[in-house]
Image (cartoon, rainbow, N blue to C red; front, side):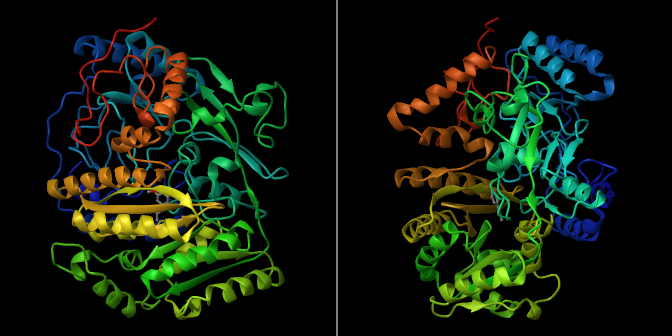
Length: 602
Ligand code: EUG
């Protein structure tokens, strides 16, 4: 595909493609795409490439093995990655590599992509991988943005793209408010299905961008913004193909003929679901999800706070209100840097200096924007009919106004395309694509996240803010912090936006992230989720009792996956064929590959 073709291709829509955009968002997506290609200067990948053969297998044996797999799955369901890498953009993303790569783009690439059409075919692929000792890397849809996208951790892995052919909504139960989905069902698709079937009484909880897989997001323990925002907590029941090929159903799914799989997540005995999230212990082929009842009314609210120092007292105000569920949803408290970036204009329109954009310039830009100047912007929602909301909103109002200079934004003063209305939709379970706007802050805009968790405390917020600001200044990077407030904790999400065509910027970003992870751990903070290149380091910070939990994970890994074929290195867990061979990445070791792999343990 030429660059022009890529820029001009039709954006796939639902239901024509499982990964497509709902028609209500098509126009917005077209504008987002235009902005991405308008700021793209990165040359196209010209490399004439052979498939990258994973370590541990000879090229000719590997090619032979791939043709054997073609015989099993059909020629069209095994794609060898021997063409130049095409980055695409959010809605037309690659499944061969990380389109927002922080390393050299040839580092974290797949050798081939395979498309199973059934659980049986997933089992066949697993048996094949065990036979030839080939690393396989399952993705649901590959939209794990900021954390590696579709890329495998081990170079030359065979990516299993589950979503392309396994994308059915198997069930929506309007009595129980539950559903059962396959890996290729996006938040967009589930939302559309509820509308089509006239199920107005049930809501989906969506992340900021709704194109991702419900299963993929949930097993990576992603967040959304209704009261059902903790996706992992809201799932119920999974079907998993183990690395040795057996299939299990968790929870009530173990009991033949049960009708409770999506209603009671635990079943009987050890609760095994946890080991299939953020791991490499199994391939999730079905998952149940609970749906939120339509609360019968809702109202978004937004407050701004003028000073950086307002952060600590504000967080102290938020905590008890959130725990008591007066603040009902997972809300975002965003810094002015993001308010400016999400306007969708490139950084160069505000500042052309080389260091981070001075805060004074951000304030000036914010003061010209519809919401006016501020340092912090809180986006929340109150649910229920007006008389129920009134009590909660009054409490929130009197509490937030204790911060001098707090302002409640009147939505009627905002233009229709203001970011506020995107948050409003998302907190009401209506997926959007608006959040992509800040990616165009730099040319070839890419992002990678630093995502520590803490209690909802002013001291923690301040410590993490200070650490982030200092290290961003040190590495010349604009600082974009947002606090995502869960029930008793908050995720601080710091997105580093970088130009992926600029080696210097990539190195600064990675160095900054390494130091952030390291310094945060010294203060006692850990990440809730991370990018492929940071997984070893982050896993290493969970080091209590000489890394006991890491050893426990290795024990599970070796028991469940004796040949270490499934997503080696994912979440910092390496099977025995890889251990002790220098595969781990970290400060001072940025090559993703190690020195060979061991023989199998049949
Ligand atoms: C966001 C982004 C994340 C995440 C949670 C929330 C929201 C950004 C890239 O990772 O893990 C506005």
